View 1 (cartoon, protein in one colour):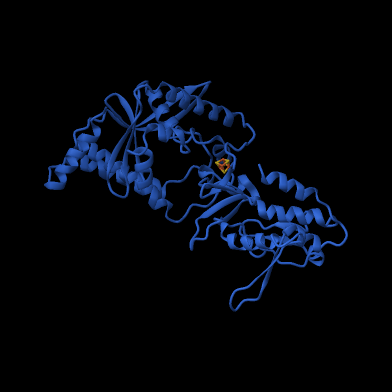
View 2 (view 1 turned 30 degrees about the horizontal axis):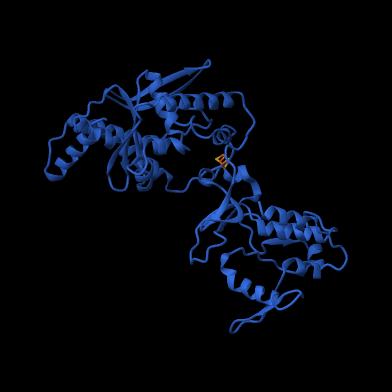
Length: 403
Ligand code: SF4
C-alpha cells in the first residue's frame, strides 16, 4: 500500500488549520504549468490528423477507426474547453500538493515511447513515485466514488474501460520498465483525493492491456474494416423486457453513434415511463413501430418500403410515416405508444373478451373528450383491407415477440 494519500491528507489538513510556508520554486512551477495548460487548451493548433497515442490506443477500436477516418462525430458543447482546462489545472495543482506534502516525485511529465511489432507509440507519463508510474486524473463525483473510489477500484475501472485508462497506464510503465502504480484521483467537485492502486498480482491486467493496445495499433495500421465493438441491448423497464432495443452506456456516450448506427437510431424519452420527466434513451429498434410498419406492408402488397416508414431520429409527426399513396388505402395518422400504463384499458378489453365469442370491442371515454374504440390491432388492420390479406409478417412478429 502506498502512503501517498495519507501524506496528502495530513498536509491538506494542516493547511486547513493554519497557514503554511510554501516553496517559491513550487509556486513558480505551478504557475508555469497553469500557463502551459491555458496555451494548450486555448491557443495551440489542434492536430488535424489522428495519431495513436498511449492516451487513446486502449479505447474501443471502433471509435479509433472512426477517428482515424476523420468521420464527423458530434460537435463538442461550448463548455468542453472549460472542462478540459479544469482537468489540466487540477493536475497542476495535484503536482503542487504532492510535492508540498513531501511526496517525492522521481519524474514528471516525461515523454516516453514503447515499441512493438516494428511500430512504436508515444505518450507522456504524469509522475513517478516510489519507482512506479502513476497517472493523475480529475473525476466527476460519480466516477470518483463508483469507479476509482471506495465503491469501485482497479477491477471496476478495468471492467468497463471505454477511455483506455488501463492500457495507457501500463504502456507508460512498460516503456519505463517499472510497475504501474495506478491512479491518483481528485474529485473535481469536492477536492477530495483517492488512490486507485493496481492489485498486487496484476500480471493478467498488464498482459491484456498491452495486448489490446498492440491489436488496436495493428488494426489501425492495416486499415482493418470498421466493425462495431458493441451490440445494442435489450431494453428493460422495471426489470421487465420492453421488446425495444437500445444503445449500451459506451455507445450512448460515443460521439460517433449517429454515423455508426445510422438513421435507425432515435433519441426518445423512455417509452414506458409514466413519470413527468422520463430520461432520454437512444433506441435502435422499437418493436411496436416496426410491427405496425411490417404489418401494413404485409397487408398492402402494392405499397413499397418507401410508402411506409418508421420515423427516424428527430422527425416530427407520425411514428409511422405513410406516403400519399399509402394514405389513400390507409388514411390514418399513426402514434405508437408501448407503456405499462395501459393496464386498465387491457382489463376492459379482457372483460369484453369474457362476454362471448365475438370480436372484443371496448368503448372508452373521459370527461370532455370524445369516445374512443379499443379493438384488436390485427382485426382493425384487416377491416381496412378488403382485398389482399397476407399474414406472414404478422406471424413473424408473433414469433419474435416471444424471443
Ligand atoms: S457507437 Fe458504439 S459501436 Fe459505434 S463507434 Fe461508438 S462505441 Fe463503437
